Length: 624
Ligand SMILES: C[S@@+](CC[C@H](N)C(=O)[O-])C[C@H]1O[C@@H](n2cnc3c(N)ncnc32)[C@H](O)[C@@H]1O
Image (cartoon, rainbow, N blue to C red; front, top):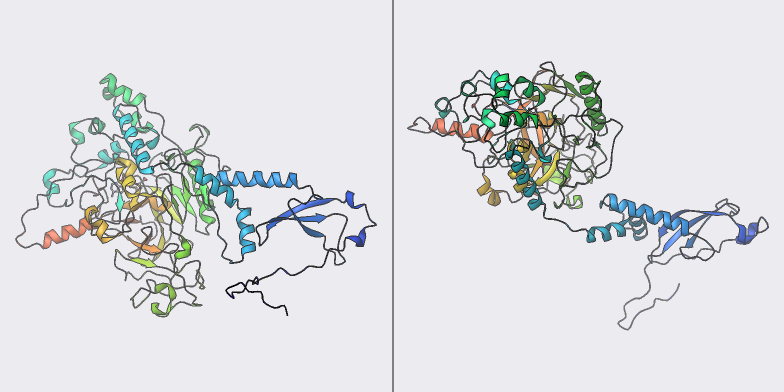
């Protein structure tokens, strides 16, 4: 045994680990086969050793050891081994990787040797250098600039800028015509409750949202009988772009009324339609036409549609085949996550598919993040080493801070509705020892079991339903899209904001209280350019779904929970799924009703009030 070496302080300087001495390669074994100089070889790999040196793995064609192995390791600068071609190729590969994305998989092993090799393989240094060089703009400012430009364009009558290349979600003409409700200030006085506060989001887990979409009927605008269908938007800063159908519906008198109006329609480009080739699947960082400024982390489970296809690429395609193609594409993307199929049907009119950004990416189960948003490290998520979690939550390592008596789900995976609305359900995660398929505390992570059908509704654009009945407590899926800062989301006007969902999770607070009540509530999810079927769930004042907050790949309280959709009652097959975009409004109505000495409420109609067409008996009349 060798004696230990120590320094002047008596501390051991003997390395803890030392490479074992390998016997020299018996080069002479087959020396008679060929002259050494001629030996053919091939470099088949590389590793970084404990001292940070790169070694090449060389395979010799005409030489082998007695045991048949024929590879050796050589330093990169070995004069006998010309590795320049291999090194060039590798360096090119790493540079390409670095240009594509800055993402790095961090190995879970503590083995320095493997880690260094793994990082080099992923072009760690190249990515680091490039990311340091790249100037990061202030995305909030950039986004605000884009929005202003977009609004100016519209005001100037140039149609929508690239930020809103969409036709309206719900046809304003039709929605107005179809509406049998004659809503007036007086009739609304008793039902409308909340006043708008400037922000314009369609959905929110908080009461702070004020939904306004230019495509919906603004209640305080003249009624259809008073004016032509397009009149209400004439002076609106976010007048929607009419679709071709709408143009066709303009009465001749309206068309000839004035040059200005005619120009409005004529200058409108055709609706952004879905026309990509299904073969165009791109796994690289996606940049969308309308969110050029938001670069996002790539994903393997998404289907990306190329943005640059002309809309008339497939002139012979029927609406039916177009629908089928989109449904097939989205089902393919969903199936990568082992999720059930997606169908798209329209028995109402001749609209082929829902209006979508041309670059729309279907994301079954994940968020993407706008550049500038720091994604919390999943390494900080508490995990458990239970083989089977439960029966009591306190037995599970993931539930450290929970004082709940039961998990949020039953053993058969149904939601128990036992979690306060502003609390997150903390599920087990991929670092846990338990299995996602069987763990009582892993439900939103499981692949979606229920096939969904996106269908055209009467007057409310496209909606969603299932072809099978769904039990109360069934978790159907999570809202997905691009995580953006709240202030960016709140700056989105009109239909731009219709697909944003605030992640503050507190239904009873408004913006001013938010910072005190939920410090994490800084983000929203925008599903305009990427998202899944849940973006089509319409509002109802008597909904059959509820939302809840759930985390499973980020630390609890980080402000980026997922929004889970769960059936709050038995839902028969073919019944539209709905949820209440503003449940706090219902709560307020109840509170008003219960007030003693109740006077007739004269709550003014919010400027951006939007007519609700849910048809429920207790309909509040407006969506916000
Ligand atoms: C998140 S989107 C839902 C999907 C949408 N119907 C579509 O076709 O893409 C929200 C928009 O749907 C429409 N909508 C949803 N619920 C509605 C309701 N109850 N009454 C009227 N319009 C509704 C409004 O245009 C709203 O801005």
